[in-house]
Length: 440
Image 1 (cartoon, rainbow, N blue to C red):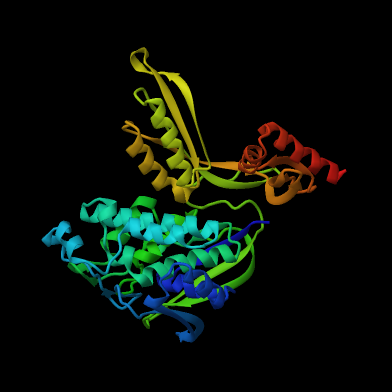
Image 2: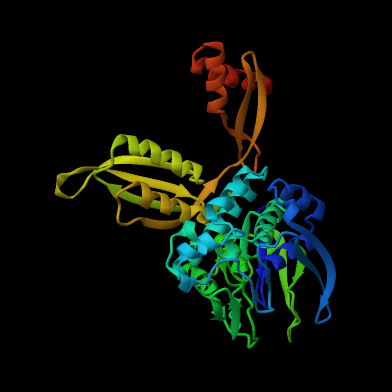
């Protein structure tokens, strides 16, 4: 059964609340410390988790103490410290003046060079890109020029990467979120006082069409970091999905409110194919025995792309997390031959893949669809062959556990074929033959 998680946000959401709720739900702090250490930022922060109470409810509070401050952001206390110059000085001046902030490329480099689990890395990159794109849209600058606290400060990095590590550790396969409260009032930022919700938060909620409401509470209830996490990773917003509840975790916000300032994380097993209540994704097909997941299909056609550009486009999209992509010859207007480009990706990777399509092709528009697909359970095992070890991808029927597909890893076979100066087919067929012999 699929492991589902639901974020119940009666008093809003922030990155530190997500992190604390995951630890309360069972993620060991020692695991987070070990994984976060691979970012190479240990000299900049300490992470502490302490029990606390909010309106009589027990919860955990996570705090990132900065030993080399790059800024600070506490949920619910109107604090947005940013180490960039004021916007009316011009962003060229802001970037030149700022030596303590990081831009998106620097963040992406930190994450990709760290020894993080694959899903945690992909999710972290997706969250930061969503946040940077929202900040860029609000301030009218390029994404790579964003030097805001929410993108570059150490505490935001720890909150976001730590949250993605926690979701991966708990085996979360689908994340859902409640509607979000708006809060009211104003918040202090580097550019002066800003209305609540903060402009970047409002842009994130707008881009994902998140349902919002007012609960009558003053102050900033949804931080940019919290908004980026859910808009990048949640499949839908609304009521909880049908599931058998396994455990819960409570993460406390930093301020006492008239209601319990806690984020509640519900974790359970899908009782039936999860049906999103918002229209941001299509429901999973019913009635079949296989697992399903959600993918995004991006499609465009061009008539002026040189062959070399197609190969480069493939490399960039696959590196960005595309699950598959292919091209087909088509006849376009004015009888011009062209290419139809189709990209399949996870919803959280859609913004990055879209950026690449616009940057590397001449297209002026990209069609998008959210689709459900049936998928087989799979795992990888290593097989020793006379030529060396070859990884095998095995796919199983979810009910009978019968092996339906066996695929030797192409790169392993190619490397061994080159090393032994034998045909690739020889290594590939030898691996398949040995596996079938062992299972007879």
